[in-house]
Image (cartoon, rainbow, N blue to C red; front, side, top):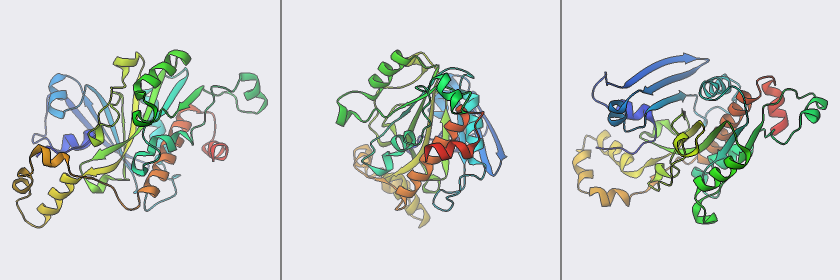
Length: 297
């Protein structure tokens, strides 16, 4: 069965072979965070994984629903991994994708509300406030096509042409294969993103190919496809889940719902804080995390 997931880690788990040409996996643990780096090196690997050539970093963290204290190493690990994917200098633009009126899709906008935007702060003012040096960072919430009538990619491209950032960070909610990964997983990739792909509403791609600058996508899975959940539940009872769902066909699967946990508001708030503070810490390396938190919260 072809399960819907945005996570490269889950795509890799679904492959029957341990060794795949063009797919390199590395797993380590740092500060209580399990970091899995999957690198797709060629078209063979891209075809096998169903993901573009590039790097995919998955952080498996303490569930957001159980632990409100983000100062346990998660922010530092996220910042370290972000820095590996971004240029060392220059203005960085962050874009929070999604619909803030729909809780499972509000991750991006909530993240930008906690971003330490510094592009507008002149060097003289920063120096007088004791904030030197500051790396220029800007943030936008482009909204969704249904509300603006403008493709997200068009808004981001227009802003990027105006302020000329050295890189773009896009934050969006993702879909997962397993319920256990909702609110426990963060994925980073240098391959960009297609907004809405997690819920079958794919929009124009946002990537280095379309923008001409490095694009790092950061996301947290917040939903599971209804068919996937049904498969797991049927399989746990010993039923022939694949045969049962096969009767639905593709049309039936598309009509099934996306499922999200009842604590999704808590998951979104804490995930947004983790990602925002990770970005802030990565961008402002000279500032203590405590000072950053005091400024933005």
